[in-house]
Image (cartoon, rainbow, N blue to C red; front, side, top):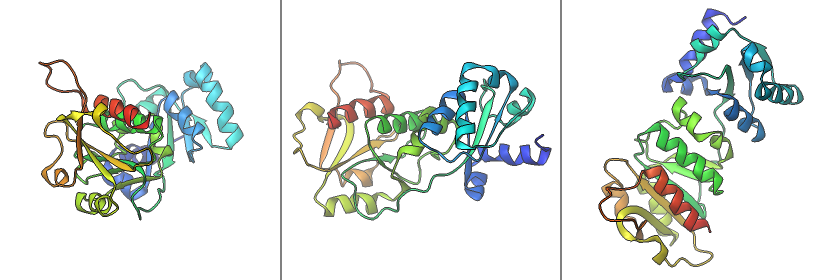
Amino acid sequence: MLSSVRIKQLKSLHQKKFRRQENHFLLEGNRLISQALSADAPLIEVWMTQKNMDSDFGRNNLQKFEEKKIPFSVAPDKIIRQMSDSLNDQGIIALTPIPIYEKYDNPPSKAIYLDGISDPGNMGTILRTAAWFGIKSIFRTPECVDPFNSKVVRSAMGAHFYFSHFDAIPEEKILGDYTKAGMEILGADMNGSPIQSLNLEVDKRWILILGNEAHGIGELAQTFITSTISIPGIDGMESLNVSVAGGILLYTLTS
């Protein structure tokens, strides 16, 4: 049985300060934990309700826990709800270390730079989309929402375990390195040139900047951009959601 002290400690991981202190975060939900298992994430311990354990998802996950020798235990619904940060918990929570990513040294051939993304749902969806398209390097400004925020983690659906680089690096450093290397720095902006008109060499290396939901790409980052690109649409609409736009741009850039 989980002690009240242990429950309090686990619940504290929903706060950035304690996540960084403990270097751990929580995973909630069947699909997310199943995806983490597929990515060989090092789950430390799992807690499940009896209802979850008896479900098809639960039985499937249970088999994987046993195969991978991951400790798991049954916990009352009330305890899971106490630890959960979701309004509708699925009766399963796992503890895992924050992944150790490669140290940034040289600009990767294809990367994303998130400039002030503030909405957790947008951040998570961008990460999930980037992983889908095989982008292994994600960089961000320090002003972005914490990528291990509970809502980000749920939206990203296991993407955190697929990246090689995942760092907060100031614009002048990362974008300066891309400039020195002669690599394309692409800025997403609704007033840019249509993405279809971008003529990249087959082996051209690039970094795509996605800006803040309300203010777009910051002034400093704009000074490094080599091509400003957009997604053509009908007149009258304000703009696309940044995570949707990011997905369309990544599809075009990686096709």
